[in-house]
Image (cartoon, rainbow, N blue to C red):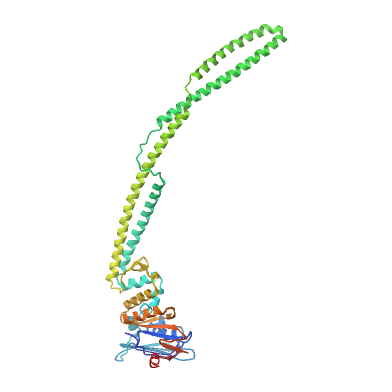
Length: 434
C-alpha cells in the first residue's frame, strides 16, 4: 500500500494541503518554517498512534484539525479537537474497523516508516531490530554468548602466548641449545678449604707479629735493666739473672719465629682467584643450562597455547558461520549481513562506516522487511543529501517499489511540492503543465 491521497487541515504548521502523489519520491519543499515538516510528519501522526502525536497538534488559531490518508485498501482519518483525538479506519467498501489502531499497528512501525531513524540508531538498537526481524533471537543470542565465552578464552590464551614469547625473546639467542648443568658443590668445598688455610696462615702471621712485638718489648726491658744496672749496682746480680731469663725466652721466641717463617715459606701459594674463576665458569655453565631449560619450557608452552588459540579461533569462526547462516535463512533482504557483538556488519564492514547512500539503501530494505505491506517512508532531512544521494534515493524507491516522502529546504528551484505559509503553492501537476 502507498499513499494515493493525503489531505491535511490545521495540523501543526499546515493550514491546508492536499497531495495526490504519482512519483516514487515525493519532495515536500520550501523555506524553514513554511510547514514542510508538518506535512511529512502528518503521515506519522495519522498512522503511528498516540506515541506519534505531538502535544499540541492543532494549528494556532484553529479549533479543530484533521489528517486523511487514502492508502487504497484502507482510508485513515484522524481528527483533533480540544477534547482529544479521534481515529477512523475504513476498508475499500467504507466499512469501519472496530479497533482502528490495531489495524494500523499491524501495518506500521517506526523502522518501516523512517529509514533515517534506523541509520541514526545506536548499534545496540539496530541489533535489536534485526534480531526481531530474523525471528531467531534466542538461537542467535545463544550463539553470541558462546562466541563471547570462547573469544574471552582466546584473549586469555593469546595473552599467555605473548607473555611466553616475550620471556623467550628476552633469553640469549642460543638459549634453546642444550647445555648440561654441573655441580658447584665440590668447587665450593675447595674454595672454603682454601679460605680456611689462608685464614690459618693469617693467624700464624699475626702470631709472628705478636711475638716480634714481645721480642721488642723484651729488648726494651733489657736496655732499661742495663741502665738500671749502671744506676743500681747493688741490683746487678738480680738484673743479670733477669737478663738471662729474658735471653732464654728470646731464644725460644726466635726459634719459634724461625719455625713459623719456615712453615709460611713452605706453604702453597694463594689459589683463591683461580678457584673463584673456576666457580664463575660453573655458575655460567649452570645459568646457560637454566636458560635452556626455561627456553624449552616456554617454547612448549607457547606452542601449546598457540595451538589452543588456533582451536578457539576455529570455534569462533564456526560460530560466526553459524550466525551468518541463521541470518541468511531468516530471509532478510540484505546480502553478507552479520553481527559482531552489537555491531552490524555488511560484507565485514561496520554499518557506520558505509556511505550515506549505502546506509539509506540498507535502511530502506530493512524497513520493507519490517513491514512489507505498507510501502510508505519519510526522509525528514533531505537537504543533507546531495544530488547523487537523491538520485540514488529515487533509483532505490523505484527498484524497491516504495513511496518515500522527502522534506527539503529550498528557496530556489523546486522539484516537488512547494509549501508556503502552511499551504501547497505549487503542486507537481501545475509544474508539469507549466
